[in-house]
Image 1 (cartoon, rainbow, N blue to C red):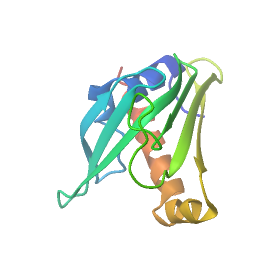
Image 2: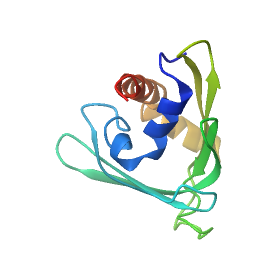
Image 3: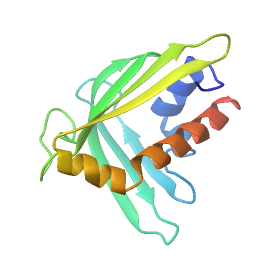
Length: 143
């Protein structure tokens, strides 16, 4: 449960200038966000380590329901063009009212294989995504 209304959390997920402020777990940053927010639209999120190493994350939106649900994948790079190499995951973000000014925020990652799921867990998926959710919550309180 995040202490922010779903409309503000959704804005944080869909406006590039806002995404840059919370998307990567600190001390990592998000120097670049490009998004075509529609099913089939491309997304590019570049995260950077404290040392400046950039990690581009190209993907595609699969489902966009304003203020309720976002689904995206790295299997495509926009307009249903498959990415090179094996796909990693499909992510689903949902926003549900949880009382005045609060949101039940659910982030689900579905992986193609048990190996990629284990790899994501070893990368720190749960603590990293939890930290990012809290960073999003703090940003949403300022909107």
